[in-house]
Amino acid sequence: MGITVEAKPEITSFEVDDANLIEAAKILGTRTVAETVNAALSEVVAIRKRVEAMEKLGELGARGDFDEFLDKSSYRP
Image (cartoon, rainbow, N blue to C red; front, top):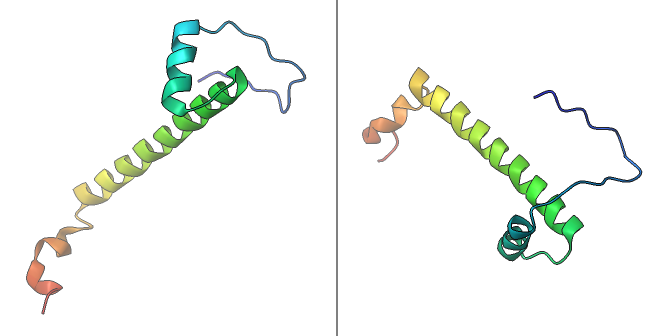
């Protein structure tokens, strides 16, 4: 992505869209700007990980790794 992040910046300053911040705080149940930004970042990371997991499952399914489960007689008495 071309993003460089320092290990631990001393001070971070940036412009935030107030309407989006307020809406995000409502959705996330956060109270401060820092809490909202951190929660939103965590949510983005979690979503990406879920998407990657679903893509991996799709690849496994396309490869036929779950085909044995289609035949219910193979795992039910």
